[in-house]
Image (tube, rainbow, N blue to C red; front, side, top):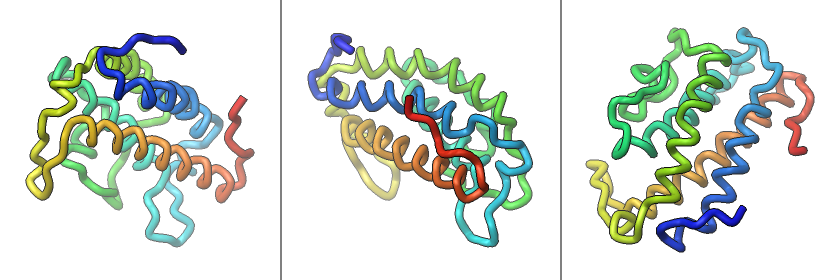
Length: 164
């Protein structure tokens, strides 16, 4: 896309970020609110949780620049909370609204982060890693979660996710 980044290390991640931006809405397109909670007698995370966890990752990316900005379901995902069986998760419309709000801010954060900041260490309590490693993992995890959403589409008898 030709966007100039403050660090050359981000150049390879930005096209993936942009693809995920488009694929997110397509992964949940046309899914009913009821089907968002189906687990088909498995222990797998349902689409409502996957969608919110994905949105939450983008909000995490902007915590340095916009620490007070939170997703609609922040309490449900705070501190890496797993799926809560009886919780009422945000609606698809709320998730899409949050995604559209956070994505330009997260993209700007990616573009503007420099090598010094990327080398800074994040202490997660159980492990330490650089911001670059965390950013790379976040982009990887977005792809993984979109893939899970795409699989749930098929398992719940929806058309395959569009890539066009």
